[in-house]
Image (cartoon, rainbow, N blue to C red):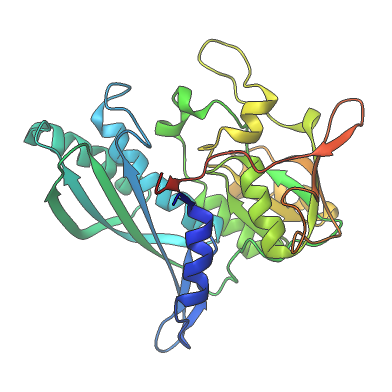
Length: 314
C-alpha cells in the first residue's frame, strides 16, 4: 500500500517518546535537547541520495558533498542554531574510485571549513547502487529561543530571504545555508515562526499553517523569482512548487520587517514580503482551503501544497 512521508512522520510523532530533556521533538526543522547543567543543543540529520537529490553527470562530485552538509546547516539555521560539528555516513558504490570518494568529501570539508564546522566522525559502507550521504550535525542555541514552525499569528507578514524557483538548474548544489541569518533572526526576538524552504514554498507554508493553527494568503505578484542560467526568470509555478530553494520563510509582525532587514547579519539577503498570515485553522478542514493565492487582479483561489514529498510503497 503506498504511503507518504507526511503520514509516516505523523505516526512517529505519536509514537516517539519525548523525554524531560527534549525541548523540541519531531515536526520542526531540527530537534532541541537540553544539556546537563543547562544550554540547548540543536540536532539535525539529512540524507543526500544519488538519483533523488542529484545526478552524477550534472556537476563535479565535490558539489554533491557540499550539498549534503549545506542542507543540514540550512535546517539548523531555520531554528536559529549555530552549527558546531557534523557526522557523515557515506554509502559508496563500486563504480566510485577512491579519487572520486575523496573529491566528494573535499566538497563537504571545504564548506565545513568555511563555516567553522568540524567533521568529527561518521561511517563508511558499500552501496549496491548509487552514492548516499547521511549528514548529522549539532548546533548551539546560546540562550536563544528556537525558531519553530508553530507560533505564526494572524496579521503577521510572510517574508522570504531570497528568490525562489528553478533551483535544479544549479542553485541546489551551490546555495549558501542561511544559518547566520537564522541566528540573527532568532536573537532579535521579533520572528514568530520560521521554516527552511526545501520542499517548495507552498508545501512548507502548509507546514507552518498546520503547526500554528492559522491560514495564509500569498500575493503571487510579490514572489521574488530566481534568475535562471538562460537569463529568464523562474515562473510563478516554479517559485511556489519547485523546492530546494533553501531560503527562510518567516512570519513576523509587519512593523518588525524593516527592523529585521536592517540587521547587519542580513546584509547579504533581501527580505521580501510575499503575503500575510490570516485567522483560521487547517485542523479538520480540507487541506489547502485556508491557504490562498492572490493573483495580479486580486482574485483568490486555493493554494494546494504541491512541492515535493517522498512517497513510498508503490
